[in-house]
Image (cartoon, rainbow, N blue to C red):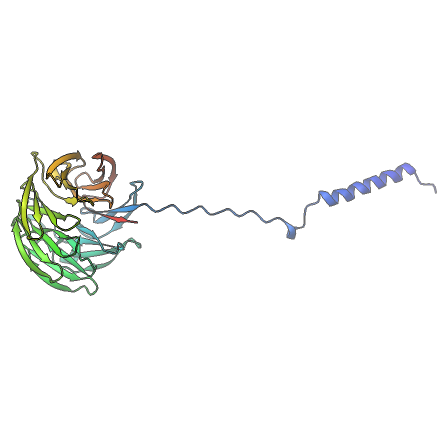
Length: 364
């Protein structure tokens, strides 16, 4: 039988094409497939240079504000009437005064108020990393403001309703001393050298000086009417005390605990409240309550060199470690003003909880 040459050629060409296609175009076996490219994880956001903590007396919590964006990053439950707040010396904990006593603004008939809930009195310890209250120290009745010893072992507490300052061992929770400090004690401030604690008495218009090591009263001196708070110069040589009703700031020589000068602030509604000294000691900043202002005082001339209007009735204030930014808690307006201290301008306003009261800043 005779075969067709043309058919044979067609068969060979087709076979060759199939072989070439199998070598170059066929998919690779499944076990030789190229692995999928892995997606690189996104880098973690850098932490802010500092974090601002604001106690809210009305809502019983703590507003946490980022220092870079001025955004609220968290709200931490605390307890009843959180007011005074201080940072522990290691920067890992916050100490907050809590009170079960009902608010009693000036002019209110206290007989009309509900009874205090003493189970709510104490000093809450907030773990900054965990962002929660990890312990509550029983520190006498109606705590308002506090100070923490330089070594972080003790807390000094103003017991507003008892005219006492309680000193508590933090590790054991034991009250190791209670000292008389005048009626309605409020401001409690430790000198930077860790030597003195100044406690203001609203009723008696005086400051009680406590030896922070010996735990005893050293002396008492008079200031303006209704003193609210105090602050020390960085070298601890001077202290400054605000007097709400007197409208003054007393300048104190801490070597003798005597008033050397009195600065009279002007303005019909100016009521000196919170106070803080700049890190370089060159300025003192004062919140003025109903005056709505933060005033800047030069510490050489002892004169007001500028002011800025913030929110309604500013009370607690705090400065960043470089002195560039000031944060003011504005109670009735439920917000916090951020002030650039170089220009004395408000650069941001941050919503907080109900009736923000005290401010503390923790550097990262």
